[in-house]
Amino acid sequence: MTDKQQPVDLLVVGGGTAGIVGAKTAAGFGARTVLVEQARTGGDCLWTGCVPSKTLLSAADHAITMRELTGHRPDFAAVRERIHAAIGTIEPVDSPAALEAAGVGVVNGSLTFLAPGVAEVNGGQIRFRQALVAAGGAPATVDIAGLDPAFVVTSETVWELEALPARLAIVGGGPVACELGQAFARLGSQVTMVVRSRILPKEDPDATNLVRKVLESDGVRVLEHASIENAASTGTGTGTRIRFGNGTAIDTDTVLLAIGRVPRTTCLGLERIGVDLDAGGHIVTDARMRTSNPLIWAAGDVTANPQFTHLAGVHGSVAASNAVLGLKRRVSTTVPRVTYTSPEVAAVGLSMPDGGSAHRVRTVQHTHVDRAVTADNTDGFTRLVVDRRGKILGGTIVGPRAGESLAELTLAVQKGMTTSDIAGTTHPYPTYGDGVWNAAVADARERLASPLIERATAALVWGRRRWLDSAALHRRER
Ligand SMILES: Cc1cc2nc3c(=O)[nH]c(=O)nc-3n(C[C@H](O)[C@H](O)[C@H](O)COP(=O)(O)OP(=O)(O)OC[C@H]3O[C@@H](n4cnc5c(N)ncnc54)[C@H](O)[C@@H]3O)c2cc1C
Ligand SMILES: NC(=O)c1ccc[n+]([C@@H]2O[C@H](COP(=O)([O-])OP(=O)(O)OC[C@H]3O[C@@H](n4cnc5c(N)ncnc54)[C@H](O)[C@@H]3O)[C@@H](O)[C@H]2O)c1
Picture 1 (tube, rainbow, N blue to C red):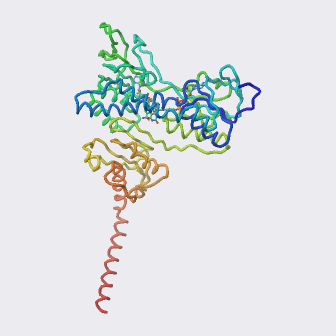
Picture 2: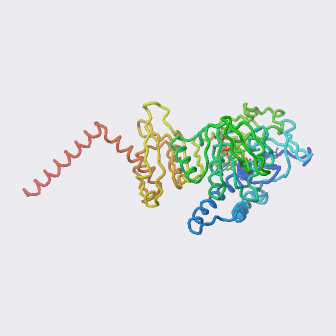
Picture 3: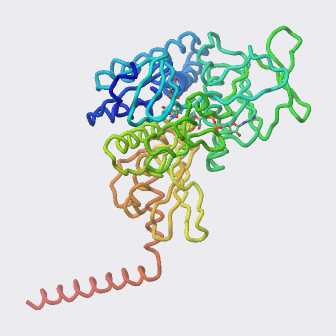
């Protein structure tokens, strides 16, 4: 790594999903690619995000069955072991060895841009033709007066807890708070969620209502539109007391801050290479993932796009192929999302009509989905938003495996399909996917029920009847 070396074609900053996919894409096209990671390749998703949280949720589901069968809950040490095992199984795919096998050079260190075409890592310099910034984000924090940091964890450090907190207060009401809140409650913690908005504020309010209901039945205390005033000692030598603006208070052993994430853009030297940031510190890109410097690209949580692993990967790939092949690919605006609570909340495109009377909503309650009835789990619904011609603009599914059913809806939105396309496709019975199909059938049927189409089908039936009668008469006469 000296300044005499040839510039690399693509220098990738960050070894999370966006960086890994971007680097593998570029190397796969034959571009000389180097990825720099300051900590561990795999990023948030593998170590502190999707993989541990989904494993925790799965363990929490098992905890319910175990409690029903045996009256006991699983040992927290066993849950931790399961999380480490899941990470260990997935980790090789994201490892430096896997990247090197794909033709990517991997450097361990923290990168700073010095000037256009030059970056510094570990005191040495790397020259580059283009760069992809995929430095991700970190949990946001908030100062709560009087709160001893020893009681505070975030989505990065909660995985280090060695014992299940008896009392857990969660500040926030987004996907992190809802998923971890439900999981810890099911494992045996007494959980209180403190949210300044409603929970899952980006989702359909009916979805929020269902999730709140289930969280409460899991024993979670959900305090919405609440504001924390300050914190103080409990006076008992353990835990901390959180006081609210309305004069009430709760005592807790651990406080989990789950109030969003901030992009890691402050120490990258982006100002030296002409990369603009928005007011929240995110890198600004166009739809090709190009920054204000046409030779610098960005993808993942470091941008202002929704923060999902699937999006980080797709955007990393689009950025890398545009960079090294000179293409002008644009990223899709169809972004599916799933919150993996029980029930899952899955959504894509429009969740609510925004075209006035030009848009319709079709809702099927899962009391009308036979798979849900047979599983005795009918708390859920499937809702489609369609335009007047039946084109599917989006929808929300709440229920078990909603994330799986969302794939069909995502394809429909992406490809501009209509409810007739879905209704005319044979679906296996009984599945939770029947929710999407039933809603599509109801919509397609209603469109067919227009007076014009009713008159046309009545004319066809009349004509066919006449033809059959005259053919029968003809046969008899012969
Ligand atoms: C608890 C939790 C659960 C989640 N669950 C889901 C889920 O189920 N589904 C989903 O789609 N998304 C989920 N997410 C979101 C998902 O984890 C992120 O959107 C995704 O991992 C972002 O990937 P990234 O590559 O942009 O960033 P990151 O994974 O954060 O990677 C960025 C990397 O860059 C490195 N880096 C930063 N600065 C430098 C530097 N100067 N030099 C070198 N390296 C640097 C960092 O060390 C890091 O490894 C979850 C998030 C959390 C917190
Ligand atoms: N299943 C998934 O795909 C999944 C799971 C977890 C996280 N993620 C991603 O990770 C990112 C971070 O998730 P998150 O849940 O931390 O953030 P978020 O931004 O989605 O939600 C933050 C929540 O905290 C509340 N809040 C903010 N400041 C507060 C304060 N001071 N006091 C009380 N409440 C406050 C907000 O009202 C909101 O409900 C999200 O963008 C999400 O997309 C995705």
